[in-house]
Length: 571
Image 1: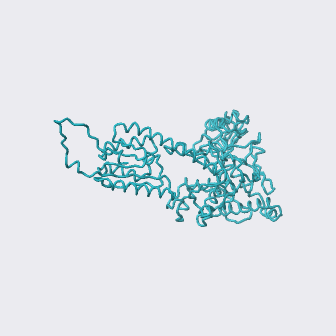
Image 2: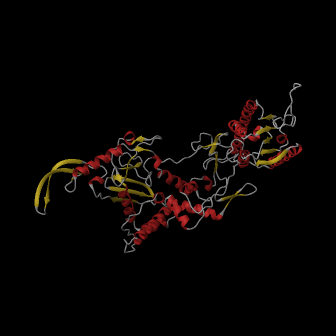
Image 3: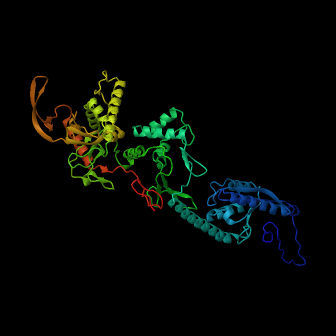
């Protein structure tokens, strides 16, 4: 190696001097010590690479010690760090800072690929070191950056090193996908599980309790901020061991299929191995691999699937949130699913209307259905639901609950619990004074999706003023809806007529006004009420309808792995 080095005087070449020319040297400079450092790096923490790193360090220490005038300025070693970027290479960055401070004059490196596998980084840092008066010697390539032609050769070698890492990355991706296809997981730390030496996953009991609590509270209607607040109030550490819980990390728990014992592989991928650009593979641009029953579940599938649907229905990024009635309310005209929309009113009123034929893209309502632009307000549906539940005798539900039909019995039990909960909530608010078995008064709490899933088959409107519920227990109820204002009526017929009315108690007067479904608008501002109705109809017609999107990745048939609950194992 020493025969090739010339930047620091290991092999000096002297041109022929004329007889009358002599060389005057700075004695102090020629005798000065040269501060030499070495840089070593390995990309993984595998035992064989750790030995390689130790070998590199020992070899450079020996080389520096064998050259008179060289003083070891330090050996900088990064363990288990990729060479495509300097972002996490702390020792490399420390070496650059020491060179800048004048602590280093010469750097030894085994090869360009150990210095960096990024062509831009190689040239940039070599140039930076030159400004500090520091040269770099690459042993494998026998290249000294102190030479005039070094940068040209360096760019060629660096480009080769960069292409090598791209090739290695592609080979590694192929190997990883072969492991995925064989159902072999790539373990990373997962809250709720520990990995044993034999590769099996075991449940961590205390963390599993927190995961189940998150699911139970979410499907019961609590929002993510409310769940986080409760966890922090109880002093429970977050998934990262911190004191605070964030809605984002809580949502990650709800969307992680690992908690039902399944494993979805290749959720993300590196699109650029040089810049380390990580891309979410949510749209399955690259094939994903799904393995069911890979390990012990923490949450049952029903709770998991319900959480996914609730999350989709509450997603404002897909238009007006469809929680909680989506899939249960049927259009009284065409029978299609009804869709939730927002009416142009000061209190941001939400209502339900016909969603028409479902499409994957977002179409306007008027493009999806020929049904008239009616709307039924949330509040009236909620009130009618509780009144319908109230109308069912507890004794009738008890009789169904005691029957052998498990599905109907389960629904009857759920309805009994819901009736009891409603009474307790109303009583706690001071609105119930009698604990009658069928008495529910002053209802003002919301209907939750879980309530509907457990008890309701479907909800329809035989008339605008009638709500009909087919309950899962086998009972059907019909409840009258009493609209309080003309603007609240689902699809009012509007005429303008002369009507007689009484003023000041006895005096009769004839006036022209609007008549809505046979009821004249006498009080208030009739013009403003009618304007509100017409604006609401227009808003309904021009509502962009986006169905709740529950993401399900394409599941390939994988050799020897059960990929679906309805699919036999492949052979």
